[in-house]
Every structure is written in structure tokens, then in C-alpha cells.
Length: 499
Image 1 (cartoon, helix red, strand yellow):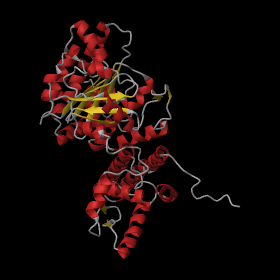
Image 2 (cartoon, rainbow, N blue to C red; image 1 turned 180 degrees about the vertical axis):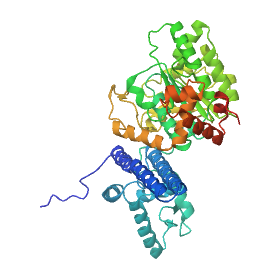
Image 3 (cartoon, rainbow, N blue to C red; image 1 turned 180 degrees about the horizontal axis):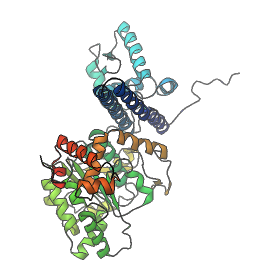
Image 4 (cartoon, one colour; image 1 turned 90 degrees about the vertical axis):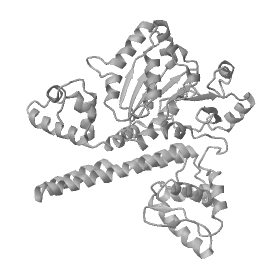
């Protein structure tokens, strides 16, 4: 009798996703950058500064490109459950053994169509399978380079096979593709002005957290300003590593006057912190995210303060040309207290989330002119089709669908009222911040500092913020040159630089 069992190790889709995510973080990008810069410095001293600069530039470029590939693969894990192209070695072989070759090949077809970066194990598998397919005259990939795959089929069966692919998910996926809406893509690619509403615990924060990460992966230059009137430490993970500026205050039990005063400070700034208005004027692309819109709306109504509502309307109506957008999170679609008349504001797309625990709110929302209502039976069908027991409405095409399961970046599982087995560990969050930082060169980091500073002269900025009194003249010359080279009109105006 033997204990041998080839199927003994069976993992859940979530476990496979965690393994794939971990493999994307084991890349040593930071060490490659450090080594490259050291080589550049040595080359500069041994040959010429130009040679060193070229080596340093290539190091940063290749690292940026690698970081971009990593972020796209992480998006593939989060949004589609697509992991076959990421796994390597024993993990890849074990995955084939568990889910089967048909599902592996469907995932690889999809990954190829999205032009994701492939692991060596995935490339080797495709090459071997392609050779076998050619000898049998069966369809498969054609390999065009060591890192680039083209979904080309070798027989007349290609059309029917690709149609099947579009409607089928692998066994590593927990989505039902006939009902699920890719709501993250809908609001983030391209970025829309949105009101996202649902009662507490419905999943607004999780949706926004995932959408912000997609935005940063696809548009790393888009700067994000987040206003958080809730200030729950367990939810800090939603914004870690992706938000450029966050303003928090625990507004629970605060008077309407104090809430409105804080909001005015957030918009106008204080002696210590730059306000949103000034900050946004210095950005080429920006997104304002306002959490707990219902709380702010109640305070605004009682204090007759319409600033937030007016700002949202201005951004949604006039911000398109300047690439400025706004997301408002609220408990319900009734945001009249903020001064918003959404029935007449087509520039704001409605997104609603309903869970299996709060379908009764539909009775309260049915009179909203921005919500395409459907019968409760249909809602329950979509909730059952959803891996997270939620239905979602997307106002861009007035469609209800099943909500996909999304990584929970917070420290709390609100469905079960317990700490969550976080999708990202503390270490992985730190790596995510590192990847985000890698995308910014030293010049970009300096531009970020200049945009955020409250100082209105370069002398004060260099001495008081950077603490570089001894090198003030040298740094001022370098900063002025940087601002002129980037033609940053906001900083040219802010620091009164002659061009």
C-alpha cells in the first residue's frame, strides 16, 4: 500500500491567487536600481558623465518597465483571477495538475490577448504545446519572441475557439462571466466622474481601493487627493501606496459647524498643509475622492455651506479638459443637501452596490431618477451569481450586474465582523509603495515636493523644508532648470520663475 497521491495538494482559487501575487513581489527591483546606479557612478568617474548618465537612465527605464509589468500582472490576479502566465516552476506544474490543460490554455490565451508579461515556465509550456499542436494540426499560440506572445491559431477552428474563450473562465476564477460586471474597469478605464453609493459595509471602499490601484497602474501621473471624514484606522489600507494626499478627520459626533470648518480647511489649506484648491491647480491630472458624502451633506445643509456641492459640479462639468475628476461616496443617491441635482447632471455616473443583507434599501431608492430599477427577483439572481453576494448598478449603460470579488485592502471583514486574512500583508503593502515610488524618478519626486509645499519662494523651500542651507544657490539653480525643462506652468507661476 502506498501513500502516493498526485492529487493530494488541492488549493482554493484564493490560495492560488496569493501564490501568484507573492511571485510578483519577488523581483529585487530596488536592488537592480541600486546596482545600476552604482555602475553608472563608476562609469562616470572612469569614462565620462555622459556615459554614467546613459547607464543610469537605462537602469531607471528598465526598472520602470518591469514595475509596470508587475502592476499589470497584479491587476490580472485581482480583477480576472488570471494567474497561469505568472506562476513558475513547481507552482506552474501543480496548477496544471489541479485545473487541467484546457483551463490553463484558456488563461494563457486571455493573458496573451491582454499582452501581460509571461513567466519562463508559461513560455516553455506554450513552446512545447505549440510544437505538439503543429504535429497534430491543432490550434495553439505562435511564439513571436521570448517575452511576446501572439494569439494566432493554426487551424480553421480559431473563431469558434476564441468565442468559447470569451465566455468561459478557468477553474481558478470564481466569477460567473455571464452576469459579472467588471465595475473596476468601468469607472477607472477611462476615469469617470462618479457617485458611488451603498449603505455601510456594502463594498464602496473595496471598489474604490481596487479602482485607485488600477488608475495608478495605468496612469501613474494621475495624482489622487482623498478626503476621509470617517478616519477608521482599519480602513487605511484602502489608500496606502496609491493616494498622493489624504486628509482625515473623525467626524462622528462632531457638530455640523466643526465638520464644515474642517472641510473649509481641507479646501483652502492651513499653515501646515496645502489645500485641495491650490493643490489641484498645480496638477496636470488629478482625481478628488470624497468619502462619506452623506455625512458631509448633512453638515453642509445645516450650515448652509454649498462649497463641496459646487466644487463637485464644477469638476464634473468643467474638469474634462484639464483631466480633473471627482468620485463621491455616499450612503444613498439622495445627495441634495450637497447642492447636487443628479437628475440633471449627466456628467456624473451613478454606481450602486446592493448586498444580500440590505436589499430592503431598494424600496428607499426606487424614486431616485438616476437609478435604473429592476425587480427584486432579478436583483437576487445577480446577488447569487456574485462570488461576494452583491449586485452592482453601473449608470454608464444603465445596467445591473453581479459584483466581482475584489481584494480587501482593509483590516476588517465587515461581512463577518472580524479581522480579515488581508489580501496584502504589511510587507506586501510596503512593496506596493516601493513599486509606486519606483515609477517616479528623482526629478518627479522633486516636482511632487514643489507642488505640495506651502512655501512660495524657492529659498524658503530649500532652507526650511529641505534643510539645505549650505547648498541653497546650487539647488535653486538646479530646481529652476528642472521646472523650465518640464515646462510646469503651475510651478512657474507659483515661484515666479522667468521663462
